[in-house]
Picture 1 (cartoon, rainbow, N blue to C red):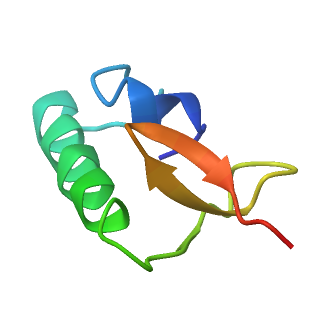
Picture 2: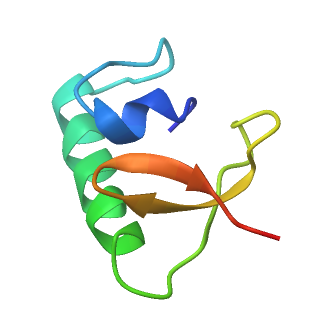
Length: 64
């Protein structure tokens, strides 16, 4: 994923998606994994909110 908004909208493509349908499916799998309890994600492309959790299909920053 290239933006936290793709957590809420995995169907939104990125310019670098070579196979859009496969990219959507992979984003959905990743979001499901990140939604598991006690799971922290690292979104290297997510600018100022790099470490976070998925909660109700939304990327939330990790609390300090």
